[in-house]
Amino acid sequence: MDTLLAIEGLSKHFGAITAVDGIGFSVGRGEVLGFLGPNGAGKSTTMRMIAGYLPPDAGSIAVCGLDVARQPLAVKRRLGYLPEGAPTYGDMTPSSIMSFVADVRRFSRPDKRRRMEEVVERLHLGTVLHQPIDTLSKGFKRRVGLALALLHEPDVLILDEPTDGLDPNQKHEVRALLGELATDRAIIISTHILEEVEAICSRAIIIARGRIVVDATPADLLARSAYHNAVGLRLPPAQAALAQAALARLERVAGIEERQGQGGAELIAFPKPGAEILDSVRAAVREGGIAVDEIYVERGRLDEVFRELTAA
Image (tube, rainbow, N blue to C red; front, side, top):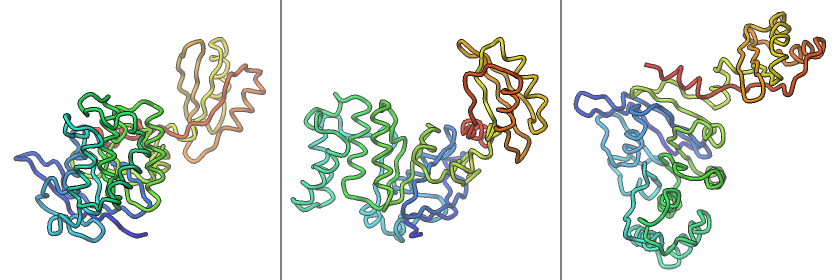
C-alpha cells in the first residue's frame, strides 16, 4: 500500500499538560481512518500538527513523503484540512471564498472554474452560492468548509467532525462522497459519532490521554464487545419469564440480560467465548412454544468498547 501519511513519536505539551504523548501511525492510499477519543484526548491537537497549524514538540510528520516542518508549502499542496467548526469569513459568500482560496493557490483560470464547479455540484452548494456565509445554516457552513478542503484535489484529507451539524440526508451524501474520494486518497476523520466509523471507515484509532490505545478495523473493535454475537429476542412481556428460563438451560449461553421496551420485552443471550448460539436459541423458542416478535444477532456495540478503552 502506498503510504501517504507517516507519523513517528509525535508529542505536544501545553505547559504542564501533555496533549499528545509520543504517538505514531501511518495511513495508506485508499484508507479511511477514524480518529476517535473523548474530549481532551488529543485528537484536534494531532490534526492541527499534521496540517502544520501547530508545531510538534517532538516527532515527525510526512505527507506524501514531504516533511511538514521542513517543506510546509509543498505539504499544503498535497493536503486538505477541514478544522473543527469549519471557520470561514462570514461576510464572504461561498463563491467568493472559493475564488479567493483558488487565487491564493494560484490556480489557472480554467482550473479554477472547473474545480469550483465540481465541488459546488458534489456538495450541493448551488442554492447558497451567493449568500453571505454568516446567514447559512450550520450544515451549509460545514459543506463550505469541506469544499475549501477539496478544492485543490489533495492526496490527503484531514477532516475534523465533517458531518457535524448535517441532517441525516446530508450525512449520507457526505459519507458517500468520502467513500468515492477514498479510492485514491488517504482520509483521516476525527469524529465522536461512532456510527460514522462503521459507515465509512476502513480502520479506527482510539486515543486517550494523548496516547493510542487501539488501532484496529471496525470489525475487530466490534468483536471486542461483550455484545458481539449475542442473540436478542423481542417478545410480549407475558412471554419473557418463559423465554428466560428456556435460554438459561442452554449450555452455550453464558448469561441473559432483560430489558423492558415500549410495548414489549427484550432479552439478550450472551454466548460463552467462541460459541455460536443463534440456532440453539431458535430451537429453544420453537420447542417451548414461545411467541417471539423478532430474533436478531448483535454485531457488537462500539460505544461499549469505546467506554472500556478510554475509561480513566
